[in-house]
Length: 98
Image: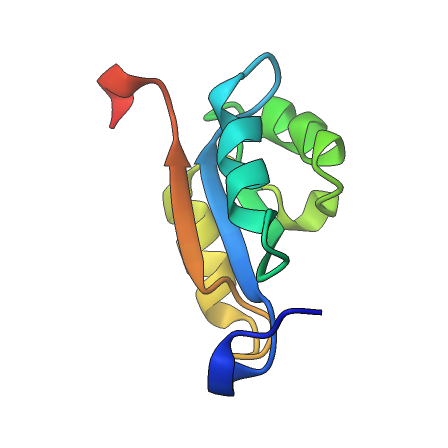
């Protein structure tokens, strides 16, 4: 397994957008994990909480790490132990939502 230099582990990725019927979300995740140095662990896949939770399964993300907004994700992830929370976020919303 590739490690990230002195970090010695994969980076934990979060994503905003990229939920059901999204093309670019899968592209972002595939690109991020391609070299085996990152893994998707959380996401605000949709601004609709139910749709976000449903989308999480498409990415093998546990339902409890699927959030209804980026603010909710940031708040919840901040409360997790340092060794579990996300390291970075990819924005995969439609261009006009960036």
